[in-house]
Length: 290
Image (tube, rainbow, N blue to C red; front, side, top):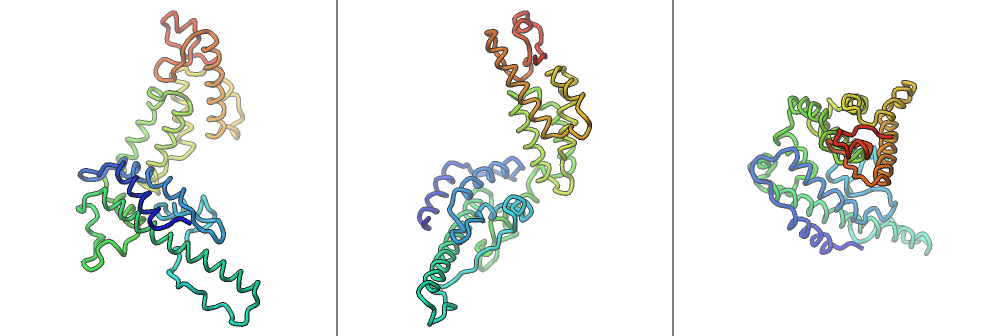
């Protein structure tokens, strides 16, 4: 069983490796903070009774969590050491089962409280009090606030969470293919931008359809993977999805890397990629994929 001491040690080690945020937090600061907390919370054993839920719920929105786990997270209530509902005349099997379930609930309750406290402490230690003091109680300080409440508050006050930034983000996405190291990295950059847009304004997301237009336009404009682009254009409109695009172009780069390696060349996606070995050796900008 994960003890309170184990949890404290886990978060202390993570805190030592994560620098404090100086000044007004920016969107990328909060994103980095959440990236550190997410794997920590996912790795902590929880819900020993049903094996369904995860403590990553402490920092995720109800909608995001429910989409992944099938239902919203219900914060466990504090309970005593013994289940008073067990009948005094219960048989041994019934009693043993009830006691096992109660023990699991008690364990989850204690783990939840320790992790909520550690997560809240971690976040508070990384931001200046100026940016969260509105949440502070004169009597209880931040102890009555959840980690999620603090994160939501920081997302509202941090730099880079305005409508104009959403537009700038979409404009920047149009040039991601110029700096990405490869198709997988390019896809990750675009999907990271989608998540950032949701943090800016959850009512104004960058849809998969928008990402598809950006990626397709960029590759047609630069003539990257032309044969794959031709195959793409030949697809029926109902098959032209973001998922299909990712599959086709990742496969195209895989073939290209094998071909270039066999020809003794190098292959980097960036600004001079996707070319035949002959074109590369002749100093021509390589843009073909097959």
